[in-house]
Amino acid sequence: MDLTWLIIIIVIAFLLFVCFGLAIANFALDKFYDVFKEMDNVFAQTELSPWDYISKLNSKYFDGEIVVKTISNIAEDAYSKKTLYLSGATQCSHSIASYAVISHEMGHALQDKRGSKLKTLNFLRRFGRILGLFLMPLFIAGIILMVAWQNLFYVGVGLLAGCVFILLLALFIKLRMIAIEKQASAFAIDFLKEILNEEQIKLCKKLLDAARLSYWADFFRTLLAWTFMTKKNKLFS
Image (cartoon, rainbow, N blue to C red; front, top):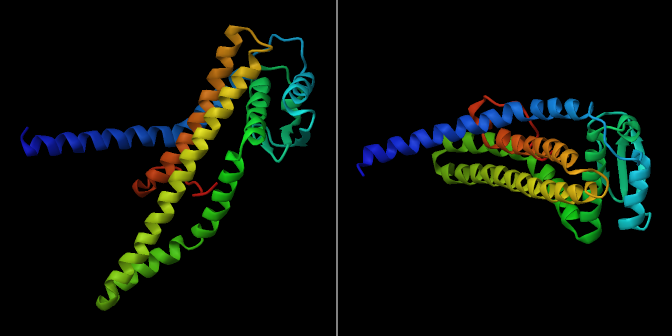
């Protein structure tokens, strides 16, 4: 193959990748909220209330150790250290969205019980936040040393290499987070199979897939920040 055509193909493939990444980065979160609103209006066909469902899972898988605390923000439900943080709407609604969210967070609880994935991720994020404080100072210092002091050129290169390391660490952590979210969603589906029919399981999968895509959006926002065409995000959020 002619070298010119090879370069053209590589450039086109790169541009297509950038366009694909930008589309996910900028629209995945909006897509999630749209799907969430849709599933929040679909009634879950189960006799168990959300509280009964939580109690059932808590008793069966966690020996009743999971504590539920109420938060005010809808769609910001979370799990941490044997505690389930759920909005009042999630706890009271009989919608598909509520059961999917509860199941997903219980999936994280199961990860926490069975291994150290969540603890490792949290450690990496805390470590990353500390390193992230040095990103801009390292970048500025590296540029100044490369431009202003020729004898310190390679020191500047080293500082910029440190910036690259911090960015790569952020991308690695986001990929780890995506894998953890995927596993939590798989556990969630197993939980939901105990109370919902196949048709409603598909609706739950639709919501969980949209939620996972929002984490990919966070990854692409970091990866493509240099284009200045993505929404802002935090490196180690």
